[in-house]
Length: 122
Image (cartoon, rainbow, N blue to C red; front, side, top):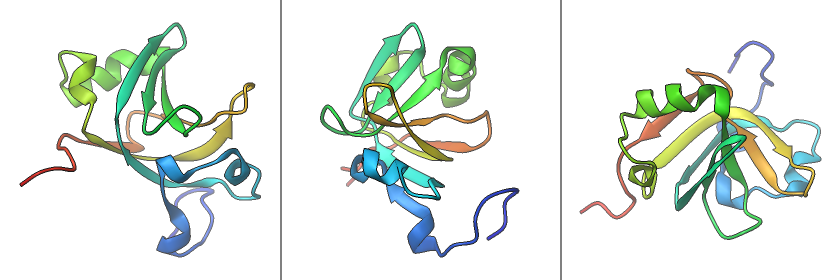
């Protein structure tokens, strides 16, 4: 796989489930990759949207305030709560906040995919 400055690695090493990411993962030499998860809650803050994928302390995805409107337009949601239960795939680097929480920053308008379905489809 070759994508700009992305590392060469196997699919197994490239893709990670967001709720399983820890601050220790961010300390590794290479933290870029594909990350996916099911959104369980959303926080709307001054910094942007915070998409949560597990209990407190679990890695989340921040949608910077500068791209919040674009994100909402591209997902087609009318209410933020419409995101709950859907899945997100994001290609970015794992970071750690000043408070020690691992997070992924939505990188652009093209390095992510919103999957508007829930895990419990029948």
